[in-house]
Image (cartoon, rainbow, N blue to C red; front, side, top):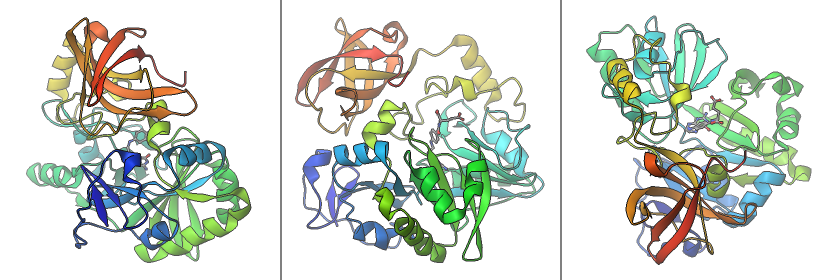
Amino acid sequence: MTVVPPKFVRLIGKGRASDVGGMTSSVLAPTIRLRRTPFWDRVERAGVQVVSIYNHMLMPCMFESPEEDYRHLKGHVQVWDVSCERQVRLRGPDAQRLAQMMTPRWVGDMDAGQCLYVPAVDRNGFMLNDPVLLKLAADQFWFSLADSDLLLYALGIAGGAGLDVEVDEPDISPLGVQGPKAGELMSRVFGHEIYRIPFFRFGFVQFNGIRHAVSRSGFSKQGGFEIYVDGAENGVPVWDALMEAGRDLGVRAGGPNYAERIEAGLLSYGSDITRENTPHEAGLSRFCDTERSKEFLGRESLLRLESEGPKRQIRCVSIDGDKVPACDRPWRATAGRRFAGTITSATWSPDFETNVAIGMIEAEHWDPGTRLVIELPDGSRTATVRGNFYI
Ligand code: THG
């Protein structure tokens, strides 16, 4: 494999490094600690061209071209190897207590079979991760992780507080089925019951005698499901069944699409939000119930921060001009020569026919319609702060 810095990989002979703006011929060491996925053989055979590293694991990002993948996702159905959305499993009498210690979102009234998007926040009020939390049972929860080692934090808290809970990373590999024809494909393989799963809920399906959780969720706004494949050895049969059943639907391998997720305002931990940010800066205030979440370890800090209000916040931004280069480091934004924030994700949107971007914008400049100047590596561009792209 050939590396395109800082975190893109291309496979020898196939990659188009220009698509992600990088260009070197160094090689990514094929070690055991760089984790493959149960589906990786199929992902390579499907012609993956750009991959990222997420939770120490490979994640496919691009197959045909950014534009073709985007068009296909919005019109058809794709199967996504998102094994890198690792699960941190909490099991035992204190499982719910530990989950609540880690997030300001109220988890006390979750139903079994429910998913919640929860900011994971430390004692000082800073973001650790932005996972999806699944409640399996009164004494079992899964954090479905974004890209940070939340397992270590959970182990530390559980040990330090002497909780009666087991924390581990089970052999579960999520497989996304995303796009407008996702329901049709899922029902062909798993039966019509999948239609009974509402958005952000999950149920279980049987496949070859193995039980897998299936949620109605995913990292796109095109609708779809995620199959939490139980057991690495069971991955390829599920993948093959989806590809076979979806042949006449034009099913293809895919992955989180950069343009589509920016349009959707879906954040990327590590890029758009980091350890430097509070959940309010991340625009996740609606997922904080700090007053009620008495066990949340950052409660005092967040209550203080909430009384002050954020001084900067996530915004969608459109950037004028032709297709921007890869946003592989933060781009400075100014307004009237004053610092106005940083752009952390940006690319061309074929549907909106402009560059779409996400940035952390200072309060004085965050109103929709505000004009900005962005310092790109190849010169300055004018830009406009948006409310969001789809609404
Ligand atoms: N699915 C699962 N795990 C994940 C992701 C996923 N872990 C990593 C990453 N993605 C976590 N980040 C997000 C961000 C947004 C959403 C899901 C995961 C999302 N948000 C909706 C929205 O903002 O409109 C709904 C939020 C809500 O209403 O609660 O879907 O994709 N398993």
